[in-house]
Length: 448
Image 1 (cartoon, rainbow, N blue to C red):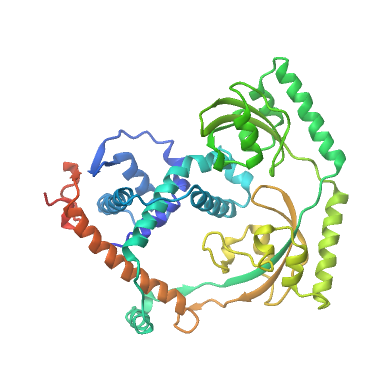
Image 2 (cartoon, helix red, strand yellow):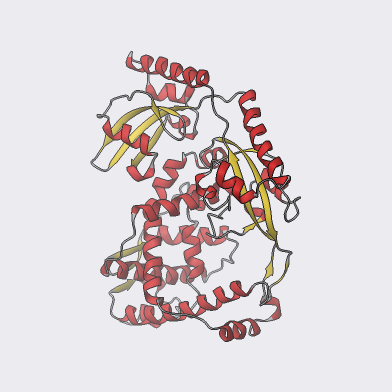
């Protein structure tokens, strides 16, 4: 059976195509029912679109291939619910953060991503939250099925030797790096200016002007085009300070000025339930002056000079001076949010950082440069390039872990496929007559 790993990868990236798919009008129908789960024609078409976007070949067999993969997914999800497997809000939030950072890197900036979608990051996360939760449940079910499996060095070697020469992957250059981040501080006057502007806007709203209209004019994030509306969200979707203020408001009420890690807000509660709230907001960020940026740059440059003179190790400097809480504790080690490890492909960097990293040699420390973090805040950064691999044809010496992972994936898929074959026999499955002639690899789907 074709590996379901590819389908899970597509599911993990599905919000790439929803923007396009939402523009298409498709007459819907139920294609299949598995347990209490339905597969709709629109779901099938969406996944075919994702397949095209991923560069996969799409031919007349594609609907059948995708449908079988969806049946496998629904079977795993159905069993996860039967077994009362759970994933926490924290797990979902971490997965969403990883996904959002991946998309931001793809588009270059958060603003470009929000512009493409016509939605704020908060709305994108909200729209994909349930999908991510289901994906995590499926992963947990797979983990349960494959628990205890392992591979031996001889199995890895056998897998590698069994690969046709033209199937051995070409490994692009990967890098590992540590970083030190310094945030320029806004002056007290800049903060006062923002607060004064928001107070004036709030007074205008209280006196009868439209919150939505003023949001379009003054708000400084992607939601401005929608009158500041960020839709329905739960507490875990949003900044804690924003959530605290939003949930304290009565329907229709306007908040006082709220400070969050993103900036300063006015919040209007449009509606709410016990665990979700629908708000619009106006956000402003205090301006950072040239002098304040220069001060941050000079501070970072002085740290770099100490490291270059060997007065302090880069990792120690990162632990003492970096203002990035995620990497500071590990000596500035940058973790790839998409892969979860320390290695980065060059094309995973933003264009600006690609230009910097691509020219560096191993052991080199970059000059400080300005960039933005995942929240759109200005930050100054310096990196130390720890390692860089040369592009090469995969081999067991340099890439053993890669081939070990692939060997394990095959073994896991074999066990999952056997589980699916057995479980399908005892599960209610009904497939539309239009798809009964599909050349499914598993006969259990249609044998009733």
